[in-house]
Image: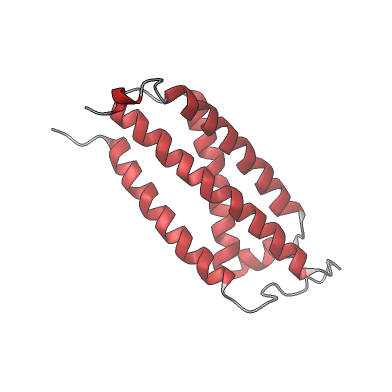
Length: 151
C-alpha cells in the first residue's frame, strides 16, 4: 500500500504546528518590550507587539483548519478543491511571515518590525480570508451523520 503524498503533508503540518507553538512560546516569554522602537516614529512598540499577537491568534486556528481539511480529505479519499488550495496557501504564507517575525530570524525580522502596523494588519487580513475559506470547506466536508466517519 503506497503512502499518499497528502499523508506526508499531514505529518509535516503537524510537526510545523508543534514547532510554531514552541517558537511562539519563546516570543511570549521574552521581556517586554521585545520590539525596539523603529526609527520611523512608530512610538508604541507594545502596540506593535499586540498586533503580532493578534496575528498569532489567527495563525493557530488556520493551521488547525488546514490539518482538519487535509485529514478529512485523506479519510474520505476526496480530491482537494481550489478553495482549499487557496485557503491553505493564504494560511501558510501568513504563517511564514509570522514565524519570521516571531523567531527574530536575521535582519528580515527587524525590517518587517520597522514597517510598523501595516504588515501585521495585512497578514491578519490574509489569514482571516484563508481561515474563512478553510472553515467553509470544512463545514462542507463534515457529514451530517457522524457515524460515516467511523470505518
